[in-house]
Length: 165
Image (tube, rainbow, N blue to C red; front, side, top):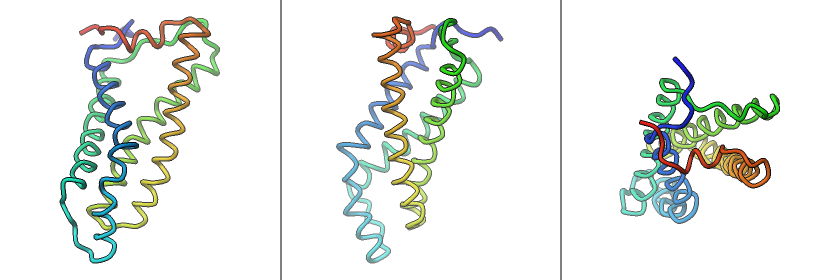
């Protein structure tokens, strides 16, 4: 299979849907599950209030969409990085993407295990990997901006324009 020259429309859509959901989960929806978690820790009762669902629902959706995006990446492939990119930078980009996919999955699964398994250990893993994910997201975003504004490559533009189907 030949390597594609651009992302597919679905790869681009999934990228931005996941990005928006993650930003919402890390900001506006981060605290919505807190009351439910406190009740679960205190009495062992799971409260399925709107606040809990406002965190669980998007979290489950992030997991499903990340898996879908990963399958698309494996089946379809992704465009190559710029040819003049230093080999070490290419390896770092590849590692960053794999790490981001892994963290999206681990954060989601650990959150589910924390909630449905009432597991403090899973909750701790959820918090730790969430913090690591924020770091990797910042690194990923900065790299895209460096490519666009300093290196003048199309790396960022190809995730912004209409993809191939």
